[in-house]
Image 1 (spheres, protein in one colour):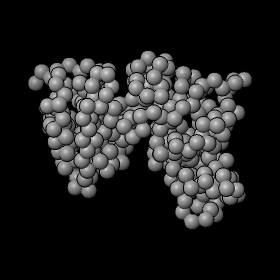
Image 2 (tube, rainbow, N blue to C red):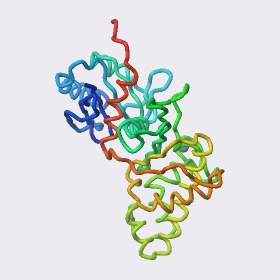
Image 3 (cartoon, protein in one colour):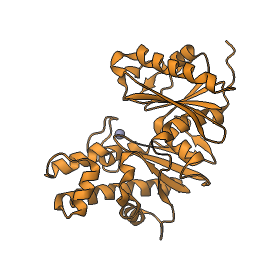
Image 4 (cartoon, rainbow, N blue to C red):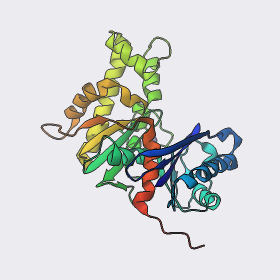
Length: 301
Ligand SMILES: [Zn+2]
């Protein structure tokens, strides 16, 4: 049995995962980030205490959350901003009384889809999150590769247009500033699109012949093609698995794929580009799988 927690902006989800990958128990509680740092961490610890009796043999907890732990042990880049600059890893271990392993949510998504989802059986899986934020994760032979600086797979922050929109990370034209859901919606609005529209509505309008939606969507697919082709040129993964809200846009798997092929440094593109299989559960399943991978040593203090 393994125990995983997905610490999201609005909810904390915990699961007990059987060795065969089955979810034995699932519990949720609101994150309540407006109530501050201690409230959020207490919520995680409470959920772990509730689930531990259902996970016999569990000696560590996997936790997935947006952001990353910096070298000094402090959280950075979390959209639950009360966590930023705080020693989340150490404070959670103190509250839980067990070792934890934390990874960002895109890495958890990639691990889950590689081990138990659309990427199963593939040697190298690149998992992509296309949603409000954009991220990625690399899994090689069933193991997460985070790199010596812990930034492997940060696909969302490689720039594909140096003259593009300013990104919060300090660069311009990062993939996230061009491919995220808000980026697509803003591009449609800026091009004179009618009324605010979500990504799926823009795709529907383009399919119905709306000229503005068609132009904006063509440009968006072009960015997708460039960004995935860059990835293929460097990593040549065995498969790319798409997750996040925008991964449900069907056109990514044919017109998007064609855009990738046009930018790929090869006479053909054989890399499968697949939709996720685990849906919203991928993050929390990946968090649970972190523990199985790492086998943390028991605490000696
Ligand atoms: Zn950036």
